[in-house]
Image 1: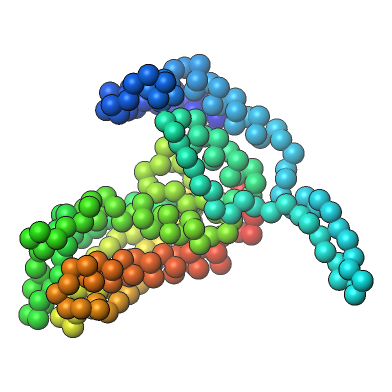
Image 2 (image 1 turned 90 degrees about the horizontal axis):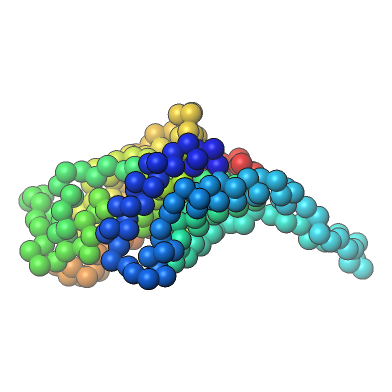
Length: 261
């Protein structure tokens, strides 16, 4: 990872220049966001320093025996869910990735996911009694599904996995993450019976394209509490996403190695 940072320093600096032009920041916040060759080199050296640290995973810190003979041990285990507060510091991505790997956490990139053409719009989509698609004239998502769904799913799966860090595609610094969940959302609307429906084809593969979770089609439904209420429609659609995230988390918990590095 450190070598890749140094090898791609020109591309990283070009992307950083684009961020600086678009961010609208000034003063110390702009300086925090700025990269130069020296800062990229420091990021790489920080990763190498983490590599040289002793392996902390499953180190036994203490052990004692209860009066009833029960042996209790205190050991270090993988971190679990990792939350990141960036505060305009690009080096946080490299630091987090290095620490996550060092502490025995798998890195899972969630995406890319393609979305059916009819969903690539901000309007909420429903079906009428004749199974024809209807667009909400004034009822819209804050962001179109093809933009918002993958980050939302990544956060929810990350919350449920004990020893993996899940990041949304595309993710700077995780292009070669060992595991990737990808797929297609072919349906996400309501049916003629008033239920929210999500249909997803998905799989999980390694960075060498070995299959970890075979391609499957998953279908979820959630009843809309009040027909015609877009608030209830949104809640039901979000429930189908939560159900999908739960299935992915369960599948990954079983498929990922116990200590993935």
